[in-house]
Image (cartoon, rainbow, N blue to C red; front, side):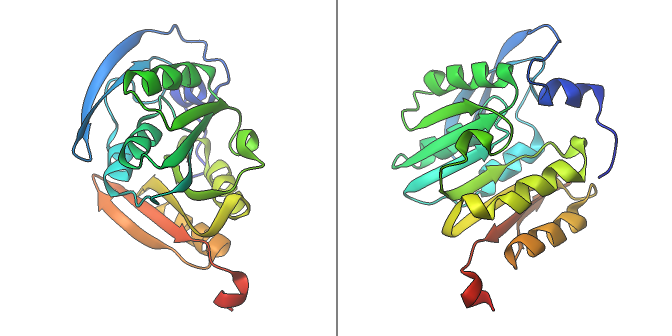
Length: 212
């Protein structure tokens, strides 16, 4: 987990990717629905929905109402599917990558999503004053454990009572260590799904007085 960021990762997590934006349109069938996404170089997994993202989408447990956050949204696949499945929720997606923001805005329109928006900024900065009923993330694991820890450790202060944090990670790249990070932040963790070398971890926010 302490691995040095790769060159590709630096493109994905950069505020302004230097790689030339070569766009393409991909299609995917997720949670019983058809979606199409405009993607581009400089944004993670431009040729297809990657296996980790797909596992998170297929297993994510969503509230019927309230606010959902997709943190580090890329071109918006997770948040757009969540918004499509739960029309009464409001989905907010964030990313530091300006190209990801540009793509997500277009994908919201492309999939005719009315209950979602995207905000540019690092991690929770764009939504610092909001409280969420669910936080979803395919985190930038290639950055090392510190970035992922920050997402998990700071999540509770942005969550309502009984809200969940659901995150997909590679099973062999810090999966067990991240379970401990979740437990330290929430006092609980479960493996929501496994497959294709990934697992989805989920923790629920409980009142500290009740958990003691």
